[in-house]
Image (tube, rainbow, N blue to C red; front, side, top):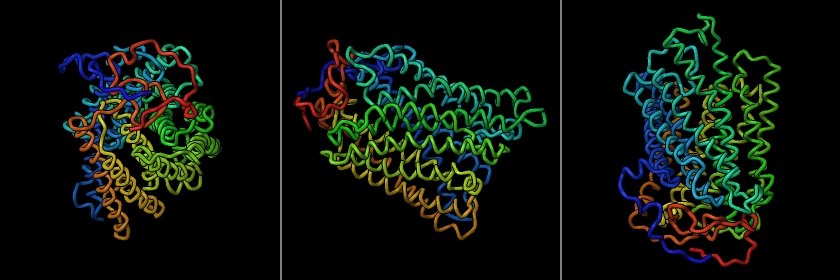
Length: 538
């Protein structure tokens, strides 16, 4: 495949004007709208996190009041989970790449795709309105009966916002499923699909099946507050544990909404950077479906200390161990792909290595929390916080950043600073471990999460954690600088700067409005790096 100069009729060029973007039906433009939106919410969530870490520098709890601290960690969780982590890869990279990877000109339902972005913006705006109408202090889990009866903060406003945002996920999942089934190019069989498509397809199944449950659950919380109905309040005949069952039936599979697309990104990057076909392609593909299915069967491990029977806890503990197997399959196969590969140490590889290190630690510590005896000791401690962040931040965001750098030239037609990217990857990896590894120790020592004051003997570890958060913030801020610079001053990107395989690398950078000038036909397997076809390596 030869170098292709930037096309004059790229999706970025025409039509011009803000209205053309806000009314667009082009999946690539909608992906860019999502990219801008989630970046803003990531920054907002990061500011809330900074407030948390500043408070925890000292043991006394002397910077914020306990009420304000409750609101800080609640809003940090709500913003980061519902408005960044859940949509980060599917709505940006997924929206941009899914049609191109399967040889289609757009998603199956372009108008619904645009509506999903508007629903996301409306839901996020309504939720953030809670900041100006009393805040939110329930924790991101909205646990009842506190959220449904006792809290004096803007729970109803936030619940309605999350409810609206849920429809954005449902519509995105619907679009991806129909597109994958109905719009593949001739010759693009299921076992020629890129693994990124497999992972987003599995994620879409979780979105479709799980999101309605959380949407209805938070709506019931709002109804109980507004109408005095007795769903979860024991004084009115409700059951607060019912809320936990409903909430975690969605929210544990939601972990895979956040991490499965990242696993698809890593599969693409590993193959491209090692110049090899992914080892055990079919196993990696089916492991995505296995994670999606088993993810619906483990919600009860969040209820080990919530009046659940010991026998139910035992079953959920066993299934929790089983759900680790598909993730282990992926990690093993990525490692086997890299083994004796012709590894290119360009910047995407650095994000891959960081992901594999952090995700492995997160996965192994999840086994501790899935074990009944240890879970009882570690529940609601900083061990849980550290484990969650190693998976969600160390895993999902590391993969997101890797994918963003890998496909940035394709999305924008511009190259970025390779040295800047590598520096950012190192800062994120070091800062992340400095931030969250001490929290494993704090949790094992018994420090409860969500407390703004703690005994003096834990200060050193908390200071390390807060200093690490500063390094981590610098690592995340750096790409904003050099990627923005690249938009205006970056070198023009060739069609295939990494020498990668896949349909997206056969078209110009950035793509034209309808992606392909002629009908596409696929006649080779995915990741066919044994092909003698010439490639351009930038």
